[in-house]
Length: 288
Length: 288
Image 1 (tube, rainbow over the protein chains, first blue to last red):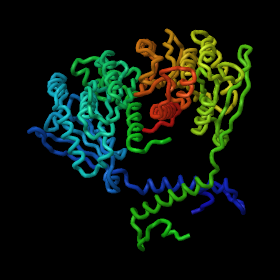
Image 2 (tube, one colour):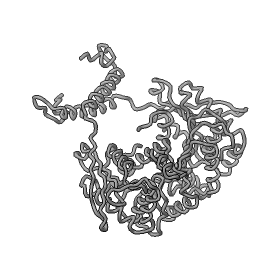
Image 3 (tube, each protein chain N blue to C red):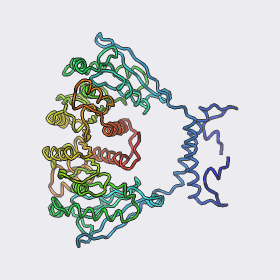
Image 4 (cartoon, rainbow over the protein chains, first blue to last red):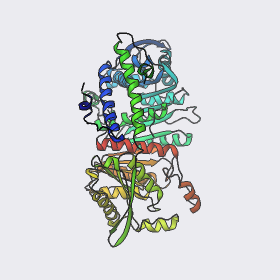
């Protein structure tokens, strides 16, 4: 191998520090590429996980990178699905989280890992939880499964949820579950009950044009956060309506004759980046 | 140099790919540290820049890393000060931006680079701009200086501003200035005039408890953004009041008998990170 040619530099008899530095940088880039080529592409392990809560058979979905779990415990993230149930969309988010180095568990709130594309059925399924202790309890059962994997650093656990799942994450936090933080993507907003024992930080990713969250509901939610001394960040994304992170939203809306629901690529990308930054803060990877 | 010892691994006669990969990773870490040690600490060049607008002598502050400008044109960022004027706080932000690889120009809105710590004087100085064409014009004069350095890629220019300066950035964008984006930190909110020719994206970093922005003012601002089809992100930070990014805010508030003004380290750090992410999106460094 012609070292000088590789480095793109010819050294004088006495190379100066700048030349050495320049060559060193090129060598690092070269070695990084070489190492990357040697490394197998990240292998994401996925598993269906049967479990049970209050007599209901559930089937969650676990995802992690086993090269990373082999090196030690990882931060864990619970993923809570939209009102459609545990479908491929929620599972895909778990895989995306696994690629980022998290152990992700997509919870099944409804039973048998079932999902629907029928809005009236989805409404019926999700309605059994709103305003009831069952919402936090069922989510907690999923969180228990995540922790039972033994792969997770129990001091570094978060939950994310979409639409219905965003509300579930808020309620799970209010219940006192040991979460470092939650992220609600276009979630229904559930004001914090007075005296909630929550310690989780909140990141609320909200579509500025979401017709399902009225200004009064947003104001009531924020007021409960302020009054309760919650640590939260509330982000509104221009042009985004309900379900803005789900590429299937337009099709589902059309099938069900729903309006105010649709995908927004910019808001999807931005909110995912905001989530990553939030996790970096929670789990100690933050840049200065 | 004992290579095997350095790498912390003893190779068999035929090392397997995993061993090679592991050693390679360690070598990269070692070389990175070595290269970092060789590299001089980033040298930030700072300069006072006298200029003039409408007969008023101004004195801005330019900051950049000359190792980076030596490699080509960089994205540029205009920094617009609080109502206190071009003080060390605004200059420090310019230096922070220079360290991140931007050419930063802290504009002087008032003249002679003057600043005050007296709120009544600050109010008088800032009042001459609100609602007048002078606000955008004076900021544009600063933007012209930034571009006149010849160091900036003119397709990659943003503006950031604090309090009064946040409002200035909004108004500069509305004037049609060629900005890719603006960031307003605890800025006064100026609703977009109908038909504004702005193409800039907006990032609004807002203290959730800022008493200087009434809910109605926030609603009017957002409505003007929505109606005008602006690309914006509006972030509320829990617990933050006015001037939350300025470590001197508490002292200035106390000196002047002002309430609702104070530093908030978490909101400061988070909003700076959000700005960085926003710039990564604007200037093409975004991660996937």
